[in-house]
Image 1 (cartoon, rainbow, N blue to C red):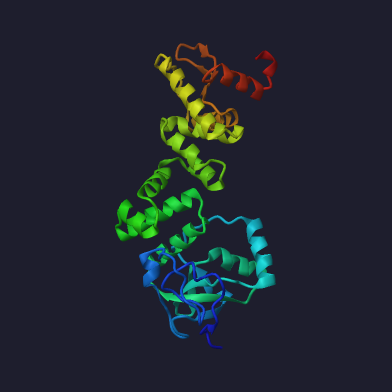
Image 2 (image 1 turned 90 degrees about the vertical axis):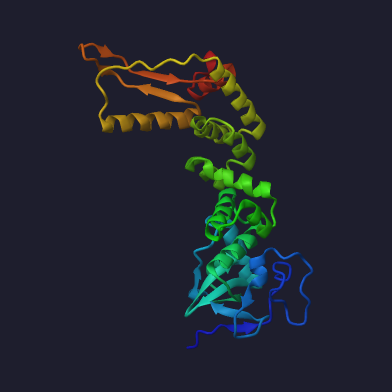
Length: 327
């Protein structure tokens, strides 16, 4: 059985996506700005001619290593799959042929939905492009559709810079975004993994991230956890950060009391685990000191220290601890 894809007339909607690419036979290309140099230079592969759309077996398509998108909403995929069953795939995916298989350049959501819908073949445009051009085309298409979450977008910019040796200014020109947009996105990669996961999930916004980037890295995770737990707005987070700054300004720095009897590694890890869990639950810094026996034979009591920023924060903690009647 031949592995060459069949071709047919182009589906609807692609005209506005890529200037200089394929169009429906008998139509004129849409008069829109080219999304990027890589897309403009891409050459549809033979056979079938420059404007051909091919029907490619779904089982022969593999995700390209340059795909910037990692997260897909299951419910949205099911809805698209239902639409595909009823109307078909209205817009071709972009592929690059590599022997018997095809690497997906753009249209991964459509491809996944086609799999869910049980399609045997999917309409596709074939392009002869390098890995770098494929990455750029994929990133552009996802950005145009607003399909990427904040971290996926930032990682896409970073990978383009690394692999092509591009500056932020050059990336901004190729992608069609302001340089400040690229720079601000890249800053998100300096945040902790926990905060980046929250940004990807949408429980923290770009506005929240901007505020968190302006505070001490040691305070970011706690502030982020409290923001998510309480559903704080950006303005509320700014107020919280301002209160934290005032509280720290009034604190006297003291050296922690050192006691004899150092913890073994297992106990230290367990203590840290407990402190981290308490911090996540309470949304503020928690210090745990274990009970221990000193060198002179006396015992030192263990301590739990829960920090709060102001009276409002204290009231919140009392409510969390089911002691709201004391507030």
